[in-house]
Length: 431
Ligand SMILES: *Cc1c(COP(=O)(O)O)cnc(C)c1O
Image (cartoon, rainbow, N blue to C red; front, side, top):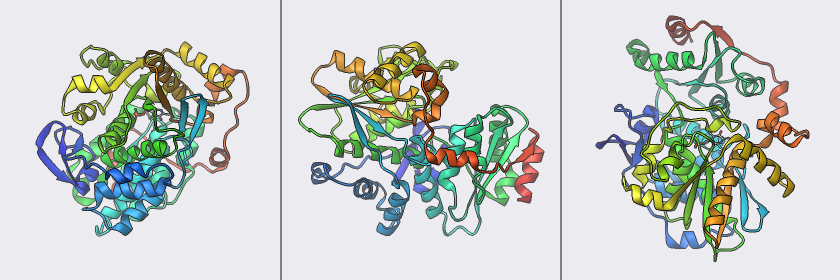
């Protein structure tokens, strides 16, 4: 499979290069030169197919030139080690739960796929690959857990001292093995600066292979298409039109859903649901695309003022914004509405996290304006992950699942470091 940069169609690279580089040198996002359509018989046979059977076919269709059948099987088996079930919340209203992975959020799918694929593509490389990750919390845990125990790869996580929640911190500092953690005396931006500087440092890049595995990497983006196929395979009826509402921040998840549609999955409409960081809903409703400083909300994984996957949304529609606005409808909601939704959904017998609740609200708005659909909202995180907000809103206790409790009991291991690049460089050289 070959990819172009969204900043320059003439700049083409193969799979391995797109993944190791992450971002194109011109700062564009990599995008498939051609999106292959799946066989009609496969789409017809989706009801009743298992998640892994779906994975073999979809990933095989995309990567058969780059990977053997055995590698594709291994990759899919590693990624789809947990399901993404549909739960009916109301008539014609489903939640797709994407939080059954190790760190309780949908980012586990992308992180697991990315780590496995990287190790496969780099197998013949004599040198170990170092993945540098700056994190303010969530990304660190998903990437670390995805790469845990993967051969030939070492992950180095930089996080700001005292600025990450205890639970989040435990999710990556207790793993050990090939996961190393550096606690930086500074803020998140200092961590990011150190990582960026390392990628630009000539001496380091001559000595070692450094890569980023950040969220715009195609190896994290593409596998997210898989659970849209899974959702479709689990529907009860197929006679109704289908709309999927995606609680969004950087818009990688939504862009992956549209990728699934472009491969032939019968989804009729998408809803871009956001909190007050509403740049994309505003755009979809007719404004120009106008990035802004982010504002803080209770659905904080979506507090993004300059959504990085926006160029991919346009590329999926060949830059045709009329078509994009036809297929994707945008809605946004404030924290008060989000809390009300958590309460309303709870009365229906379901526990939603703040992100899922925003997805629910977007779906509700769409369905009220467009009768005759059945709809799915993506539940992107386990409610226990945003326990304080959910407990305060519902005035009740929320249990943490066992796999989170397990992290809390683990022993934290990390090295402290100042925010000076030379210290970081010496650490990398000595490691
Ligand atoms: C990252 C994240 C999102 C936003 O996903 P994007 O692909 O960036 O739009 C939504 N919900 C949760 C819980 C997340 O962690």
